[in-house]
Length: 153
Image (tube, rainbow, N blue to C red; front, side, top):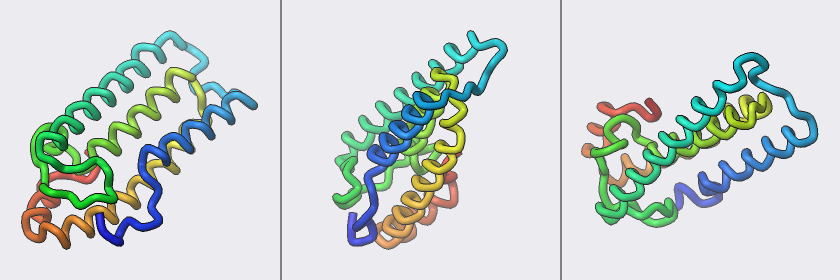
C-alpha cells in the first residue's frame, strides 16, 4: 500500500510468531484446555481448520480475479464485495485467526487463548490502518462498503 504500512509486520508473519510462541509454551509446560470429552477437540478443531482454509482459498481466488494483490505493500486496485467480503472486511485475517484457534483446539493447549487475544489485537490494529488507507484511496465507495460490512463478523 502506501506509507501507511511502513514498519508493519505482514499478518502471516504475526501468525507464525504467535504460533511458534504457543508451540514453545505448550512444549515446555503443557496446560490443557479440555480435560473431559477430549475426543471433541478433533471434530471442532478440524472444523475450524476446514473453514479457515475455505475462506482463505475463496478470498485468494477473488483477489486474483479482481487483480488485487495479496501483498499489502502494493496498492489495492479495487474494493471486493463478493464471497467472504460480504460478511467480513478482513477475510484473510479472519482465516488466520480461525486457523490459530483450530490448532489450539487440536493441541488442547490453553496457552493459545491469551496468544490468540494478542494476535487479534495486532491484526485489528493493522485492519484499522488498512481502513484509513482504503478510505483515502476509494473514498465514498469504501465508506459505503464499511457501513454495510463489519470488520470481523
